[in-house]
Image (cartoon, rainbow, N blue to C red; front, side, top):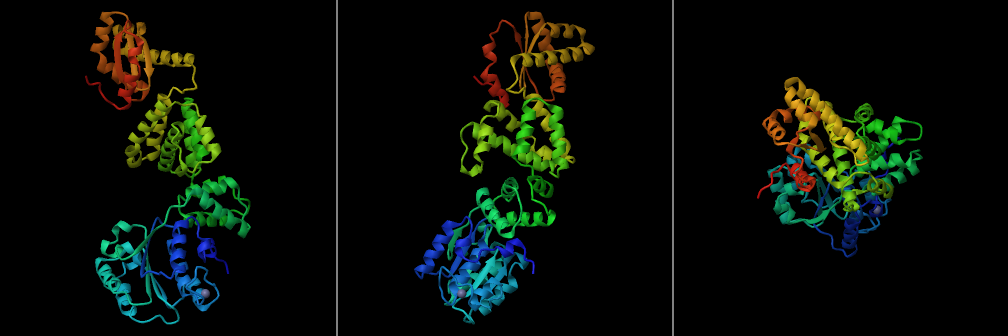
Length: 468
Ligand SMILES: [Zn+2]
């Protein structure tokens, strides 16, 4: 009979549990010392092995050779627990009907001794979902626990479990698994199942599983029914619409090189590959953040990055200041993209702005002044229609741009006065031309350029004013 991967490879003893060494060591220690508690709380994210560990603990306690840290797997008790058929190991799902009937039954049944086994064990999953009434009933039992009864509560949300219950439990916190741990486990399963799959595909599944071994196994399972050939990274993307770091690296590369049409066609390709615009938005902001962390040397073990990834991010030609501006812009657009009726348009707008705003640190000063000349010509043409006089002043002015700051220098008081009078309308034109909310600085050319330095950049970045 065909068995799904997650069932077939569900760990059956403590040594097979992935990534929860701290829990396993404590539980084994308690069993060896004969210090088995009445109630345990297993807290942690979904899909990290809480119920699996609860069943292994049950097996260890009830095995004919037990209590033992190495249940035999062959006695009646071990085999029944493996098949979820043990009459003395009762599993209750707190989420299914919030447990009212079950807890009522529990209060009755808990008084009777186990039938075939050493302990009567109640495993209550998602215990935080129980009703207040069910909690009260449970508390009465926990206050005077009958001998030979063990409760194992599992929860993804321990904050919602009443303190009165928590205080009677030994608590174990399960952690999210790292991508490397999930990848190791999936590699092992693939080898045993004879599944042909590339390293890269395994890596992407592991990253996408986001800490949950169960999700990782379920994606691998789906992929095996999806293709007969060797599973590639592209298969992973096609199935789960997940774009890997290569996608974001390339996208960012195009953004920083001001290739707007390439940026938009990469987005188009990503969406055609099945990614949701909100997912791309999230992936991009995460990637920008990761890049910032790497650039500032704050990369740590939680980032789960390979050495090659760290190296290419370190070498990415972009400066930290510009990166901060980009992250800030992206974050500002979050609500806009999420709530927009057409999330794709929202994302296209953001990508366009990031591309236009970012002159690209790889660009030479020549291409930079070329861009400014472009900017000046467009402003001149726009202004000319409304006011030829103003356009004449613009044509004589020097216009510099640094992200959202537009610096206009003129060489006489008359021009200065005229431009300052028309500031509002100039700003409107410039906003239209650049697609961003510009700040204008209009001044005489004699002023030293150094004054338009860091302070102005900081003001733009934090949208602030200088106070004296
Ligand atoms: Zn056994």
